[in-house]
Amino acid sequence: MKSDPGFYDYWPYENRPKIRWPGGKKMAFWVAPNIEFYELNPPANPSRKAWPQPYPATQGYSIRDYGNRVGHKRQMDLLDKYGIRGSISLSTALCDHHPEIIQMCKERNWEFFSHGIYNTRYTYGMSEQQERDMIKDSMETIYQHTGQKCGGYLAPALSHSELTLDLFAEVGTELFGNEGGIYTCDLFHDDQPTPIHTRSNKPFVSIPYSLEMNDTIAYVVNKIEPRRYGQMLKNNFDRLYAEGDESGTIMCIPTHNYQVSCPHRMKAFEEALDYITSHDDVWVTTGKEIAEYYLEHYYEQAKVDIAHKNAALIRSDK
Amino acid sequence: MALDKSYLEYAKRQYGMDHDRYDWSMLTDRPQVTWPSGKKLALWVNVPLQFFPLDQKGEPFKIQGGMTMPYPDLRHFSLRDYGNRVGIYRFLKAFDQYGVTPTFAMNTELAKRTPYLLNTIKERGNEVICHGMHMDALHFGGQDKQLESQLVQDSLNQLRDLTEQKVTGWLSPGRNESENTPELLAANGIEFCCDWVNDDMPYTFKTQQGNLWTMPLSNELDDAFIMLNNLHSEDSYADQIVDACDYLLKEANEQGGRILSLNIHPWMLGQPHRISALERVLEYVMSQDVWSASAGNILSAFKAQQNA
Image 1 (cartoon, each protein chain N blue to C red):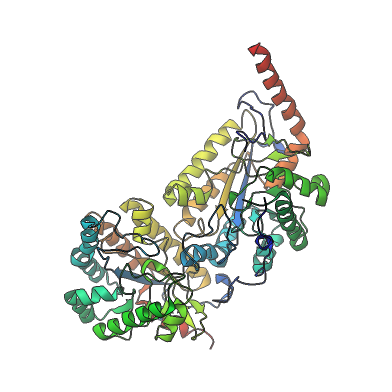
Image 2: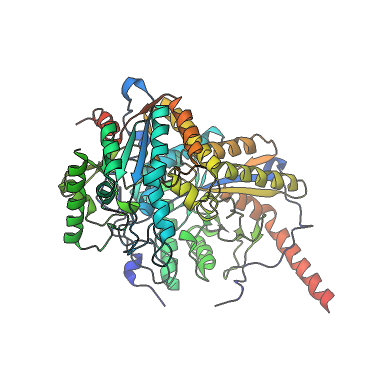
């Protein structure tokens, strides 16, 4: 085990090279619906139980199924209304289980990125080859069902190994060259994209995905009231929008159809989307479009700046 | 280090669900429903009437609302009992004031222990569904099938005798089931079960003993889930129900009838400082385009519109 995963270097949130998004916009905004499949009776993992109750876990399983049966269409209609294309964090087995959902999102040109195969199959305990196989299966599945070269990764149920990011980048290269496997949503250390070190030294970035704005973290972990969640989204937006004057920022709302699409939560979510999209200086986009734009325009510059700031610090120590 | 190779095998990666209990179906793909008198929203107020034994075994887990302290946990025993002595009568007044038709999900053990309350409900003529034997008689995976079968039979037969009702609805204590519960319910004359929370409308649930219906009783809008589990305020509870009501009405106007289901516990909302939140909710909801009905009547109206 390591005391630090070593994915990125320290980089102060001041005096960074100035980012401007396409059209000169100062802020990028994306919504990342997690479209997940949880198994009723998954195989046991040695490190993590899928359900607190013995099989069948009626409550946990069925509320997640609610997301697909009831919630998905609600959120999709809302994103349509505000001109937002979702960037789907996908349990890729859903391509087989619920192809109707995949078709609807494909028709809307939403992005699909990998969230593993099932959200009840954890990375813990996998060999390097097993994790590589799982990641490859998920990326190939997306390609077969949507024709998209998967750009991003959010590990299933946020279960990681030390090699997760390396493997995702490498499998992306193997399948799609520099068009696939270019960004991760697994790290929460920054409000701007960050160059990430991987074994293969491929251009690869962390795109802010915000655990704090994640509806499941807000509603299930932090137990936030729906209207307060809506206010938090607006506050998060206001600050990042203002800071965009200095250098381009990113706001992400990660969602789950079994949380945000419940009837008592839709109003607060809609009010936040309405508020955010009513601002002019916002690039409403997808995770992969942000990653690609950043890699093309700011990635090299950022690496130089990071190296410079760390080198300066070391010199001043002497 | 590696996991067994079965961990990367996906036997049920196929169209539809990963089990054969019900078919995959998106809500928006189904025929539209209309409620009696052309109402848009059916209101199902479900009131669990519960007995939490002082000598709780907690097998296989302690349920929310149960004993938490070393024996004897007089605090929680009596606080839950408060609902059946005091809170429920505040509920009944509120229901009558706003013209609400409640459904009572009764532990059979409570029906045995509180003949006055049982008689009150019988005289009102409200529907009673079975909430299992009591709050420490859980149905759970790995449970002995014969024991569970006896538990289901006893709970239902005794409640039917006591209520003199057919009792066709079921809500498991803790909303937990074993792998056999649906078969046992179907074999014992249950028509609908309220445990699963994957839909906002009724749907067909398959068992080897014939089909059940699943009735959509929201856990996200349950008073104890919002105020005890999430620790939200009474005002927030009322806001959440009002927002849900508005949303479902809007959806009903576009997509056909919907159901607002409120699971409310007399030991929770029946407290003096919370009852006004319930009254605010009922006043608001009943002023909308709403049909207040029992679970069984809502299901009957729904079934009458399904193609055989």
